[in-house]
Length: 174
Figure 1 (cartoon, rainbow, N blue to C red):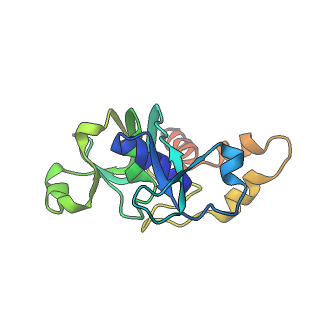
Figure 2: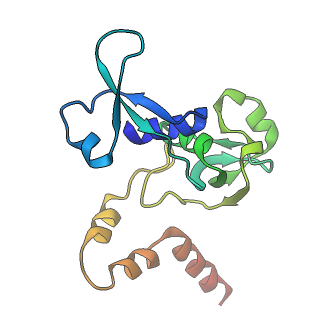
């Protein structure tokens, strides 16, 4: 919630965002967060999280059209404030769709095209994570990647769907 608060502050163009739920923890001290008095007189202090403005946000969407309008069918919890806070937005997507299909349900468009700088179509691009409703998290791949051993990163990258697809395409050409 603190990360989202920082992103929201940047998206709203304000220097900080109040947040609840960190009283009694070491997080404010560890992060240098400040507490301010409630300006409405409750007598309670509230922690404020400084604005977080990423240079670039990269999100993976279910669908995108040629204008960059992006639709995420899962939870927009992170993607919405992230794309509003960042200076530049790049979108990878499972598939390219027509602008007409997005216009039929405009309320499902999470990121409007005018905010998007570049788009790439990358089927299974969220792997090993999930892309609702298309595929779930590949827990076995995550567990293999988390091992502290030589060659783990190389093996993980070699197992990526885009690498497998490229191998299949190369085999078909032979």
